Image 1: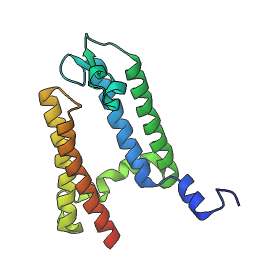
Image 2: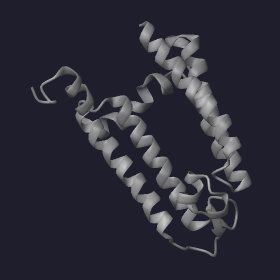
Image 3: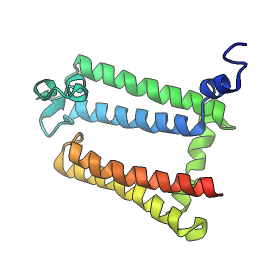
Length: 177
């Protein structure tokens, strides 16, 4: 029996819309950070993030002075990771959702998260969850743009808690129905 023929093998090799959505969003975020890093420096105003040192936790090798548009190997690798994630997510969405990637994008405003922002029809828990997600993302974008630093661990700590609790509440509501 091959891996494709078994039930668990099929589950591992066929993409889910949730995993594909996560890959698309993560890939878009990585590409956004790459663009910010290339044009203005994502570490702080005038400083560029060296992604390999940042991810590895090596503070001595995590940033350099940014002198205008400058490409280093870290930017290329991080940008390629973003492209691969975005591509894998779009490819997976093409298989997981009828109509593919474009149907998924056009369905976002009608989805549970967006539609429950201003309507308690799905329940007050869904409305609270949607606002947690919106406030978490909004906080990250606002704080980062005001302070010109896009990779602050404290900001991530606040944002991730709000966004993950929002998604968890939506997931629990889906499990109940």
